[in-house]
Figure 1 (cartoon, helix red, strand yellow):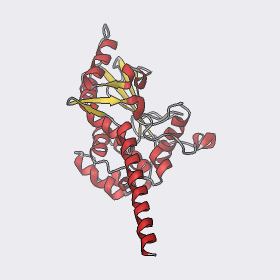
Figure 2 (tube, rainbow, N blue to C red; figure 1 turned 120 degrees about the horizontal axis):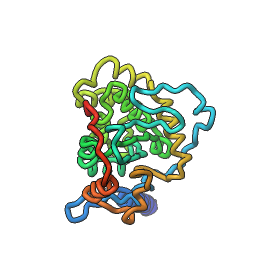
Figure 3 (spheres, rainbow, N blue to C red; figure 1 turned 45 degrees about the vertical axis):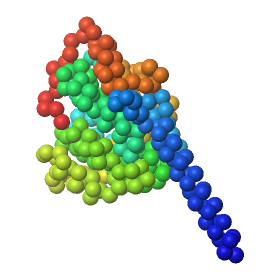
Length: 269
């Protein structure tokens, strides 16, 4: 009997080990690689980090009146713009605040994206989705996205967006489901924390905005996050989906040749 128990425990440990190795391998495939000290975005596979399996809300959901934060765009494909509207190039990003590959993309490419936005070369459009909530359960993707939209309403989307990714918990730990944590993170953004932001986060003011954005993602044909497009071109299909921040900057500047940069939006948040 003891031998059977030992064998059972051993088999369970082996299965657990195998599952962990599979998860680690999947994570490696679905995030950036660090090669020779340079950040290399592997969008060709990063887009599969959270393949879509959740249900769409359908036409009934899209027919509801939609609360839209100041400066954001509603409609069938809700988005948050960052940078000057007159910038000659547009970066479109579909992302999930619980997505590890999105965090890798944001951390690695944040400096160059900010530089291009702040010099009027690039405007960005963020579409927030909740794939990981749908696949793994929980509400962290939804709650974090709503909090980011509360920050947008207060004029601090970019800074709070970056704080969320800098403080992203492990994918399996749905820490962003805790609205108190999201409220506390506002302390890292000067001028954001306060009663208005707290009420917005606690009440889920922009939950329907997030859900409609998520529904829009299901109709795009893209399969996962981050999905990143430059001037409408899917970057997963450029340079075999692998490029550095320097490569990205060159792509933008090449696309902008002969075009006048926009006056930087002020103030930049």
